[in-house]
Image 1 (cartoon, helix red, strand yellow):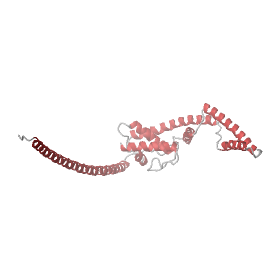
Image 2: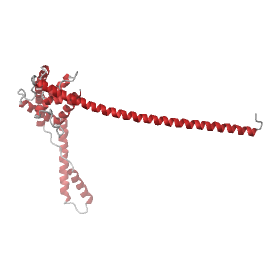
Image 3: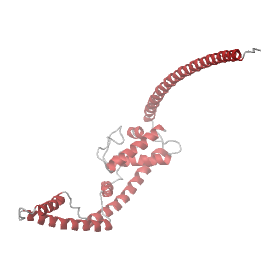
Image 4: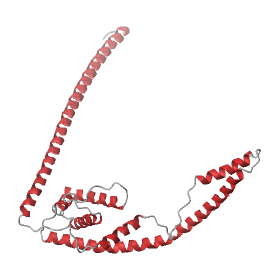
Length: 285
């Protein structure tokens, strides 16, 4: 043991310096090792990501190949069946009258048209009366502008604002009770007609399915060669509406069941978009 206290402290400091240096070296080694592991993990992650990307691309290619093969099989199946199978006719409908189609179209127009309830009609007439009163006062104010003395600036401004205000307003349309009554009748007649026509269409489609008839090309292109498992009723409902859509809007394309999508918003575009969406789901099933 060193009996010199100062020397003992110096020795202890030297030992502590050595321990600190050793600890620093170990920490540096640990950091270097951690950085190497992180780099290795990052490299592995990049490699895995590239492999997954290549796998996704391959899966997409295979899916496209399967889709092309399915279409070729459908086409081949149609050619084989066409030689000895009776074809379903979904294009000629002598049992669906022009009167029924006209009633359906009129009912759809009635549903799309804005009509007034009795309460709305009452409030609208009140608004029209208020507009007419303001319009008369504004006209009187405008006529008074030419008779005001030169020093009546505030009064002139008041009358001018009154006239300017009415010019920015629009007189509400007068409710037509006759139109409301006609639309109500048209809706009822249209609902009856559409039920009759849908029953005729669905019956023929169900008969074609039961007899395993060959569907028209436009029908299979839209709805596939058969109903998806477990969704037969939904498929029949959509198939019926597709045929009805063709009849209502005179679509005659032998390949495209619904024809071009309507550009204008309204009942036809809404129906077209719904049927296109449902048909796409059935083709994927």
